[in-house]
Amino acid sequence: MKSNQKLSILFWLFKAKATKDGKAPIYVRITIDGLDDEISLGKKVHPDDWCNQTKKVTASGMEAKLINIAIDQARTSLTSQFMELQSKFECITPTMLKNVFKGKPVEDKDDAPNQGLKKQQTLLQAFDEHIEKFELMVQRGMRSENTLRHWRKLKRHVTAFIKFQYKTSDLKFSELSGLFAEELYEYLTLHKPKPLAEVSARKDVKWTRQIVKIGVKKDFITRNPMEGFKCSGGDVEVIPLEFEQVERIHRKKLHVERLAEVRDAFIFQCFTGFAYQDIYGLTRDSITLVGPKRERWLVRKRGKTQVGEMVPILPIVEELIEKYMAHPYCIAHDKLIPVNSNFRYNTYLKELADLCDIRDITGNIRRLDTHDARHFFADMMLNNGVPLEDVSKMLGHRNIRTTMRYCRVRKSRISESVGLVRERLFTKTGRLRQAS
Image (cartoon, rainbow, N blue to C red; front, side, top):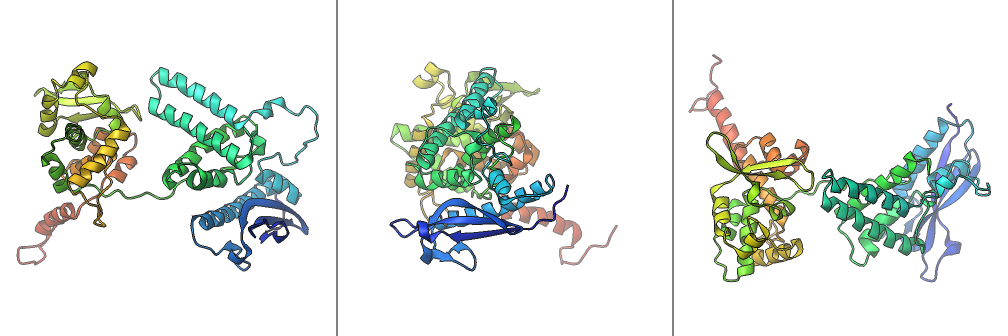
């Protein structure tokens, strides 16, 4: 069924509802064949910062940027939802589109008595149900304990957001509007007591969208109101440490024991590629003898993905294992190397970067963290001739595309590769060789 109706979308300021600070709420008017309905965008802006031509906020700053993103997202969502309704209904009203945008049934019947008790499940109840199932999977070794902790933390974030934004303790799925994702993202990056970085906030929105998707599958709502939110903010390029910088850290004379141990743990990571969680879990049983030469390898399942990772023990790593063999902590806890909590480890690394004068490309002291070691390992292996597939296996990645984000081809490697081509195709005087 295809409708020939036309949709018009207009964003405007409802100045009559301006608050004491002069800001007016942004509304969107939906017009279909002369009939219209209005939806509050849930955003406010001062009339001086509003452009009537572009229907956008002209002010600078993060808040203005988020409002303009919300406007674009609302326009895209309304257009796609209208097209979907066109394929199902012969005649569409603005109210029908408004209901779908707000996550309600197409023809909302609020006065229907005893309407489907099943549809009364709330968002936080769905979180609890998902976390409960995830706990069982962790107990059976099918999922990571770290991922479970993130799900629990995310539920706390969403609970705080609902209280902040909606002044209530929970929301039914039918109460989720088309702006829920944008509002959650805005809260996480601007209004949360300890705001998250944009990439972390987008990840939280993405994971929350998974829970709302469960509500769609269970017919609590007809569509996912978070579907239109773009959760990818583009890959942030991590510039790997230079070999000279790692060598400087390794050779630095340190007289404070805690810094010396953190430095050794970091060097251990640099030459094994293990993440913090995995180096923390290494024991004597992680050492395996491989092949006819009985080479010593570190072999274990990666905590995050449960994918096996295996790395031959390089001489510098062997020295560190030997160094801490008799360390009281390693003996008491059956560890290969003493490792602090993740927070302390990263805090001490920043202190270490200052002591060793490790600077980034802008010339500022680099904010070292444990993941920099993993990036260095991948970069070192790739640029010394180790195939990408082998690097992926050593890092414990499920997908080689993940590994590609870690690897940055250096000019020296390109020069070496092109040098081989140059020798094959040209003579020493620069003349093109004849085809044989």
